[in-house]
Image 1 (cartoon, one colour):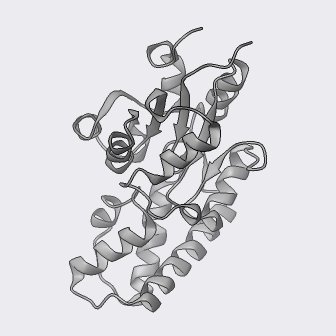
Image 2 (cartoon, one colour):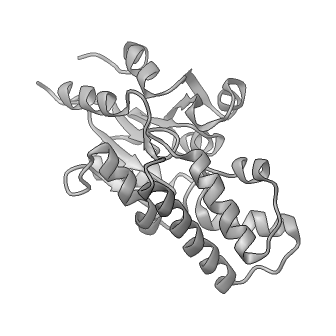
Length: 227
């Protein structure tokens, strides 16, 4: 079967893995531990951008001094809290995630994962999906200069696949994914599974919006070009 020209570039948390609210609670625990008081809803609105930028913005909103040591502590404590939740079994693939990836493999449609998380939090999610980074291109925050809403992650993922970014679909669940897709000159497809609304995703650049991976798979003919 010939290889398709269109490639799928997936975000991970909230797009393939049901983990957005676990990340919110992990960040809340880290911020509380650092003595930073922020409402949970404010944290949720920042999920999806790079961890470093996320922490910078949150600290800026509180008026606290931003130091490299403080950011390192927050990242470490967030990773510890998130991985603890993962070990307790509260983080799972979203409905249809494994089936969607299997379908793309069957159709010989190239795909990659581009996540603003670092490998320390991405690794358990990849294992839950059954994704082997030795066989599937996986680009994490560790591997690029800037993460979302900058386009670096998706540009790197397209390069790893050897495809034209302008022939690629960015599948994400946050406004930060859609903004990064626009900046990369790729088409954005939004999923509601991250907690952002239909209108928010569209206004940020999504040309189609679906409930979750299962819903996208049911409508795959709307976004995937046929041979």
